[in-house]
Length: 300
Image (cartoon, rainbow, N blue to C red; front, side, top):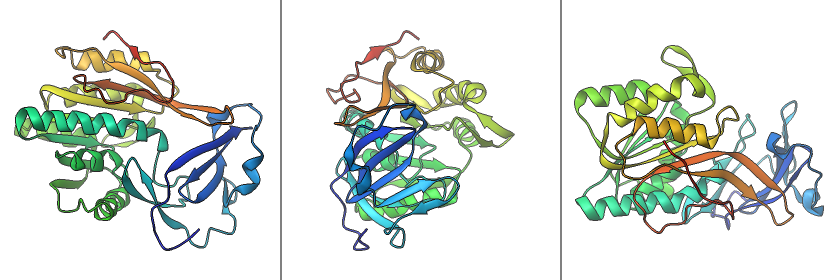
C-alpha cells in the first residue's frame, strides 16, 4: 500500500464465501469477515492477492499494514481510508449507490427553492455529506463519534469542499433533532444511517425500539416536499418494515417509499446482501437500484 495518498480507481467486490469477503479499495485488496457470505464457497482464485487480512482474534495482518492510510475515489469523491481495529476502513461501499440519488435530490431542491439545507444523521465519514454539499446544499453533519466527524472534515478538505456551508456536529441524533424542532428549524432533506444497536442519551439504543421516535422527530423538522434517505444494516428489520415505519412518520408525502437492498455483487457470482435503503423523494431520473436488484415500492 502506497503512502502517496493518491486516490485509487474505486471499489470492487472480487469474491465472497466461507464467511469472508475479498474486495479491492483502490489499489489495496482486503480479505475480511462477511457474515452475509454465509456458507457459499469461494469461487475466485484471487484470494491469494490480498494485501491485508483481518481476523477478530488477531487484527490486521499482511505486508501492507505498516502504511495503513490511503485514499480511494468513490462516485467522484475522494475518501480517506484506514485499517480500523474493528475491521472497518471508514467507508461502506454499498452506500455508493445512493450518491447519485442524493445529489439529484439536492440539485432539484436547490433549483426549485434557490436554497436547500440537508440534515445527515449518523453521518460517519461523510460520503453523503460530501455528495449533498457538492450538489449545492447546505449540510448539517451529525455523528456521536468525535473521531468520525474529524475524519469527515478531512474528507471534505480532500475534495475541496471545506469551504462549503457544512456544520460539523458531535451530538446524539435524537437529542439534536428534538432541539432543532424546538428552534423551528426545517430541512429540505434528511439522511440517516442508524446502527442496529448503540449508545443513546438514555442508554442502549436499538433500531427496533428507537427508530420510530427518531423518524417522528425527523418528520418534525422536514420541510414540505423534503426528501428522506434511510439506510440500515440490521437483519432484524427488512425493507418492508423499514418502509412502513418511514411512511408512518411521513404520511403526507406525495410518493411512497422506494425500497432497494444494500447489495454488492462480484463477477465471480458472489452477492452480499447487507441491509436496505428506503427512499422518499420526487422522481429525478437518477439511478436508484443496487446492481440489477429490482426496485420495489412499499405501501406506508
